[in-house]
Length: 405
Ligand SMILES: [Zn+2]
Image 1 (cartoon, rainbow, N blue to C red):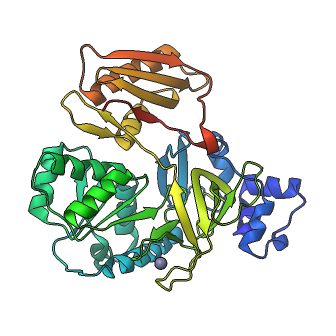
Image 2 (image 1 turned 90 degrees about the vertical axis):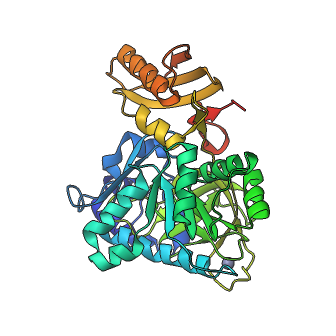
Image 3 (image 1 turned 180 degrees about the vertical axis):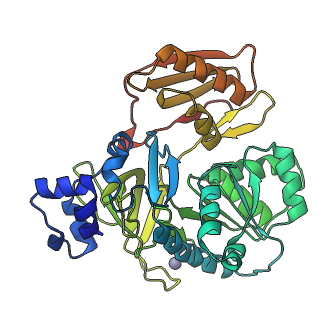
């Protein structure tokens, strides 16, 4: 991958020439630390510098994300990389099958955004796999933007064997059902990825419903990073697909057990090449051997993955992925941080793209927010156009923060 980057990816060719490095200087994953640490803002500012000239204009899976750094990014995955990620998905499924008391019932249900990464990946599979293989991977989709009562009804009707969704969202779904004594189907297991599930929600689901909750670690930049095995004592890294380091503020590797910034290299994607890339999450590696017997390296603690929700006028919650997708449709919007202070009060900081008409962007954001929270009258908006948004410790950035209880 380093040789490919050197030959065809402008960013890495320049970085290696500047550092006096040749592909032969890289023998093991640890040698990737010789490369500069790439920040999400660099990828956002110049995505073409990370795109291999061998894959420009070719058929790739294009996904976009604001991720935890809040910068809008586009990533292209080549066909092989998307199909190799299926093998990582197989590891995850094998762990799910090993859950004691397993009993197959209904389908696997994914509660995800209608036009998000999950949907794009499935469409790409259908295009590139033989139909019978694509059929085997098929999940039943429920859109994350459907009202709570409809989702609960659909789950009761489908009786899924497993549910895959965002942690915060599926936590909210089950908490709300249990708090209002509404009967809701308990699947055999729940998977979440892409964000964190509040600990109280996880306990509620596991203790009240007896449903084990599993976490996976993935991102638009790397598709699959790590997964929880049936022991759920950490997350196993897909070490054949990604190389993971954890660094401190000085960019040096931290010992196992010490949390720091996760820096990831994609070892399989030859389209948008990302080596030594700071993902924006804080994790700690573990040197403990997992009792499951798998020898893949283990991420011991994963914190600082947060997404949030907006509260609508009708009491429904809108997931961050829906919020950001709508907002980034507004012409000229480059970056945004929202705080919902009260059901009818939202403060927003906007970064407007150079050359764009800021007043038009602000008007577009006002319209989008009114639509998203379903309040066309009486919504107080405190909108400020700023040059740059503040980033929290470890590069963490929160695009949507909801202070409404
Ligand atoms: Zn394990």
